[in-house]
Image 1 (cartoon, helix red, strand yellow):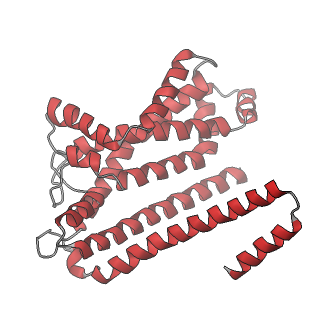
Image 2 (cartoon, rainbow, N blue to C red):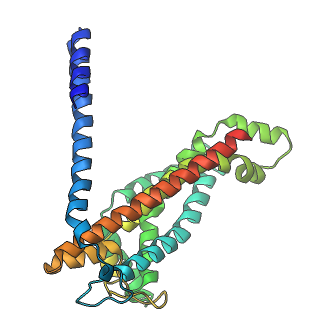
Image 3 (cartoon, rainbow, N blue to C red):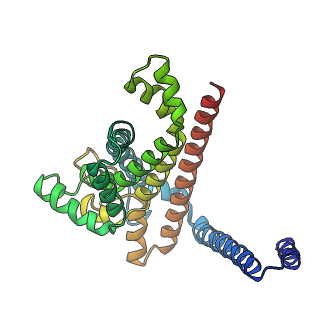
Length: 290
């Protein structure tokens, strides 16, 4: 912090333009506030939750005595996998059509993009009510893992579609022209040349989608339920880590275990992000070597 203050004072002395000085102070102040807030939140969760990380918290079966988070952890993994299995292919193929096949200036393409951006700003509880009406009631799936996964897939679909579209747009046209000049067709060019080059950006969108899935509560309460056990099948109810934490904190009797669940949730998100970032770097390194 001392070095940061000294560096800031040095910059203040060397800059003569008042506007430049004010903007520099604003940038440094914003960065400092962001870092302090981030470290405070993470530290607060760790301090509150780590003392309650006990073996009983990872028991296979949930009881009112151990309030185990293990069933919620397994349900979270299933929910993430199913939601991505539904949303990623749809989002990627839609983005491929919008970038590679649709004509420039197509009104349908513009309508799809505006709709996707609009859906990204809808509150999650609205998705939950929609999922409850369609998947739980109309289709008769009840409060189940399948209903929750389809609801979350609809939620993250605009995010995956837009990030995949921007990633495909960032691939230079020289890649496509070089592939076409060698006699490759459009489909082969897309899947052998363009898509591998866009994978790091697509993975970024998937990481953001995973973060939204893992942290979602409102939509899942209305569609997947809050049963504290490992789902026996896709039509069984279950609670994710976020719902589990919400339920414990709402009861008011197991607040420490709720903080411990937050620690595990934080570790899961960091682990998934680290794994995805390593995969993106490996893929990018492989593309550069080729």
